[in-house]
Image 1 (cartoon, rainbow, N blue to C red):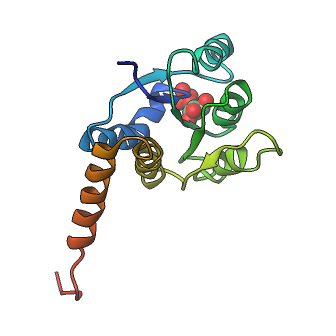
Image 2 (image 1 turned 180 degrees about the vertical axis):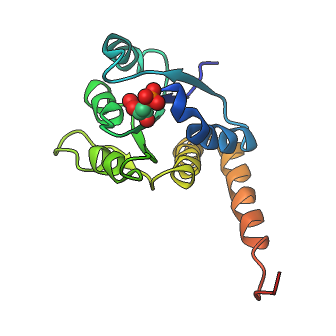
Length: 161
Ligand code: RP5
């Protein structure tokens, strides 16, 4: 069976953030592929990945990048497969640069933009799982259980350390 989720990122340096998405998908039993695809350093790789995404059976692409983060938007321009964008936190501007680069897409080429950093990457994994769960009852059940477990782990009252 073909892999349905692609996790792509602009650089090796994005992996510590993007592996939060991978980790959530692991917990939910969703298979995925991971690739370094840079809008600026490997534009031909980006083009080839986007061009073949539909025929390869990808159903969601999670794309993370930092700084001048053009990867998610460029990928959305190349394929109709839904793209979830993760703004990677940067040293210079704390990831606000990444967020602004990803979120403000022109009409016609949407990117579902997550929060900056690790939480955004984890939520990207959950969002991808939620999309796939629409047509996968087993995954829907696992996702419901995951959400219930998270909810159950929250204490009723705060306590001192
Ligand atoms: C972007 O530039 C990448 O997504 C990364 O977040 C940022 C910095 O890349 P490196 O210089 O660490 O490779 O393209």
